[in-house]
Image (cartoon, rainbow, N blue to C red; front, top):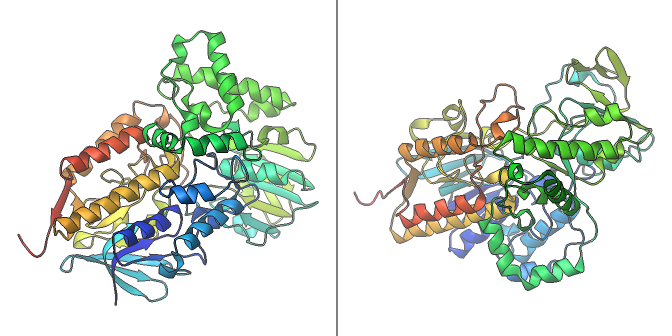
Length: 534
């Protein structure tokens, strides 16, 4: 059995950085990755138009100034191929591949209480014994199961945005149907609309979408970023969502005159992307404040989409803006002015797949190709795919039957020496993921170093700390408008999944300070122990 200090599951942004940090500590470490290359979500998500929704220079590692100084992004918002090139560049620059086992899926991780080690098993028959196990499995890495009646009967070409063919797809002149209007669908629709013969978009719930105003990287922005890199990176770590462009205002929408309020919305809309999120402090706290922005977006959509009925269908009315992840687009609403694009509202009509296409509201639509853009089993899906067993053989999926429970989104009571990166209970998907990933892995690395210094060989969250943190996350979430949406933040997109608000909405800066305070208080809420002494 192979002996390691650290077993790491996943070779995306999290796994690569964790391997780098483990080496810095002088630890033996190995990454296990199901794909045949690095990249994580940016390896798998190759659908047309796949693109990051955070500006490229912010959605990148900050741990190496040299890396940052020598990599030049081509666009304001990098597309999937460039992001994958970047992560391959990182793997090569830091010689990480020699400690990554590709095309190897971890099937189980079982804690050996006597040895105080994890036994990790793979689909290749590997058995690894590791002191620490780091789950760098990603938050959006397991596609939601296709649960539309008749999905298996369609005789044409079938594609899923989360597992797109590496060779690409030629849609020229074809009749295409796409089910879903979340972020992946928005990007796919925008990209393929000009080339298809016809495109029918089946929409159950419309998405709020903000223009990216994407384009070539601005040399002035690049120069400014590099000249002020340290202050900008610090600002990322301290603000609410880890994005400099989204720095929050302390003004209240309801205390701002309507003319001034609309001027702020216009300015943020013109900036594009997640800059919109910081427009007013009560944006996600008070529905009346949120409604002012809903009305602003509705007016924007009506101004773009020529057909009033289609414009109305594309405007969300059943949940607050921001309570589901906002999409960042490159001409999404404009697509519906094309003669070859049709929006089909399935919010009240049953939908099913037939051998020829899709049946909705009593009408059958025939297609050559069908695309499913149904999203992910977010935040817990990847972990539930692995048979993880802690003390007394308790399976993690059983412990989490009523929703995930963690302390700080980092550890779970009863699962010693197992860390999660951006797990449930951390800012995670409510933040710039790379900022949150680096914070988590720095914390985990420091924790492992502290364990060595104290000659301890086991650490775990206490049940009391876990209970306290779960209650705190719920308390903060209930102070916001987030719970008012049936979103994947609460698992509402997956049938049978417990409805629990999973990410921590208190903000990146606040969360970082809480984690630092825990360490300053001697790892408060964690129990450290050693088998060699009482």
